[in-house]
Image 1 (tube, rainbow, N blue to C red):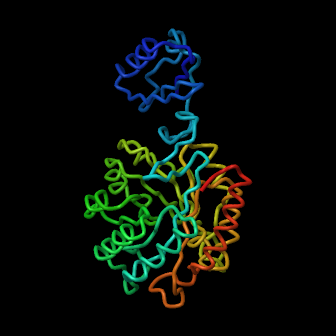
Image 2 (cartoon, rainbow, N blue to C red):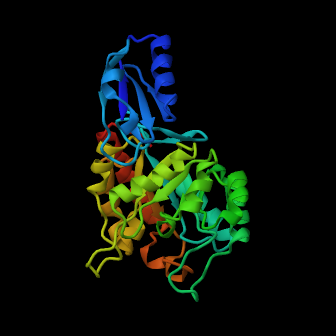
Image 3 (cartoon, rainbow, N blue to C red):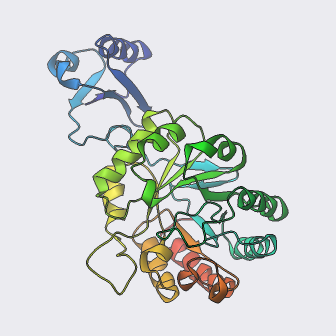
Amino acid sequence: MVIIMDPRASDEDVMKVKHIVESEGLQTNLSKGNTYLIIGIIGDTSIIDSKKIQVLTGVDRVMKVQEPFKKANRLFKPEDTIVHIGESAVGGGRIGIIAGPCSVESEEQIIEVARRVKEAGANFLRGGAFKPRTSPYSFQGLELEGLKLLKIAKREIGIPIVTELMSTDYIDTFVEEIDVIQIGARNMQNFDLLKQVGKTNKPILLKRGLSATIEEWLMSAEYIMAGGNENVILCERGIRTFETITRNTLDLQAIPVIKKLSHLPIIVDPSHAGGSAYLVEPMAKAAIMAGADGLMIEVHNDPENALSDGQQSITPDQFDVLMTKVKAIAEIENKEI
């Protein structure tokens, strides 16, 4: 349930409504913009008599929220959320470009890729330190050594870093050393992990699960936001369908659907979606045209010898070309990188 206040309502009117709602044991979430003031109600709203709320001074109208996600719901916050990371931002017309190798392999590799993607216009460096792999025999990442190399690249090149957290065991280390914490597709419904990152103030990049519905995805975001962390960026990375030629099926429709249902920014990972390098550019361009707030691209300086996902990685030269085209599309859409 949301209570839409008259923009002219006084602070006393607002506090009275909040007090009445909270006296019933419910939580309130105040969202204020230039032309609106909304009090969102979280909890069992069936105990609230909406007619009694409606007649209170300063109340414009009361609306029921049908969806189970509340804090992530656009009814709770009509304006787009902008997630700020250092001097960069994602959402609200600001496009975030995250680029780098699937796995951190060496200091030379990560610094070289970081330099090239930043020169091309990327805002953030991605690199896997801890890698969730389908096979236990595949390369699992350099783990803490990988984090150390990411920090070196950040210091040398001057670019914020994004990497995946797989376990609560390392959450303190990630909070201290990482700029954006990624929750991967396989952990989208790891609720213990979601609750823990919800207690932090770090921006969280939440990937959609392999077979997750949009509502399930938003409910996972709700877990993070319910803990107090509202710096959530959603990432569409393709879903599992009956198709076998591509690694996954990129759900571009999820972009406008998310924009309609939620105020959270959404980016797209075309690398994992298709699983092939030749699909990255067309899907990246389509994503920006569809309204995405950013891209997550796998870039490797030697894809043929990459320790993981080389087949879906593009080279720095290819990334240069892609960025030229993405910048042109962003300009058409009145957005900036």
